Length: 311
Ligand code: ASP
Image 1 (tube, rainbow, N blue to C red):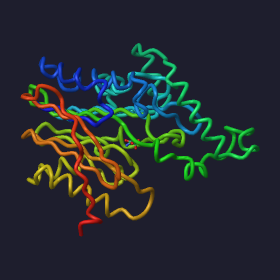
Image 2: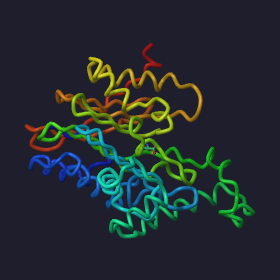
Image 3: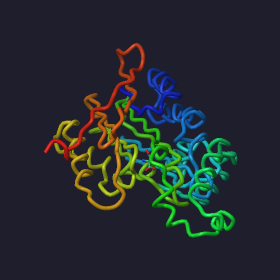
Image 4: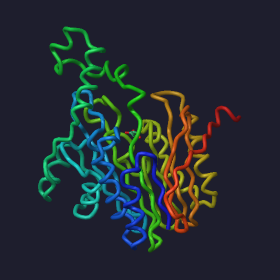
């Protein structure tokens, strides 16, 4: 068994550990933990307390992958809904589809009994509006929201606030390796924008035979590189987990166009190894790890790897 998650996981990590110890299915254990993260207002990038889109509306993304069956459920840009990783699991279990977005996802949530929630935290609304007031002219502010938003998408994204998601990866007591993600996405994103967190293969991937990977930070890059899938495939081809993660970062480092910024990769393999590596994140990135034998989960610092500096 193993549980790996990024630093935002703190409100729910212990709960997931307890459930794994009690032989829960890894997905159920991780969704129980992530639901706590989604409820915690102090986590400013996931669930309630996260940041809204440019129009001041919360739109959540989440993904779930069962590495034993390779079943996937994902939701993107879902309004008014928590817990949202739990909704992704329902998509996986109840529908012939892998992903629902926007109003369709909300409709499905209502059909299966999820309440309609007020998901915009007052402080998030205030910070969003203050930011718009700084960025827009008086004429634009009075016409808002009936103004072109695309020009703003270049300027308004706040790099201090875009960061994070919660990602959990586990190998459970049945040796199933699974992945779950949840995020409110980039702060002040263009409405309808999906990041990598609901995109299987990019933001998350799991295969119980080999391992699992999940990414945080700039989803615009990991979607272009198929990062999470590339890591699990490299392990399948016989590379060590560290080499697989490094190759994925080398692919990211090859990108020269588009929006480029930091990425953090979390990965585990079927032999019980784990790797967390950050690319172009100046700050120290922390993560949580638990393995049987550890009395308590440990918070550790990710390895930094930047092929642009070492070659
Ligand atoms: N990867 C997420 C996204 O692109 C955001 C993040 O983890 O910072 O939506």
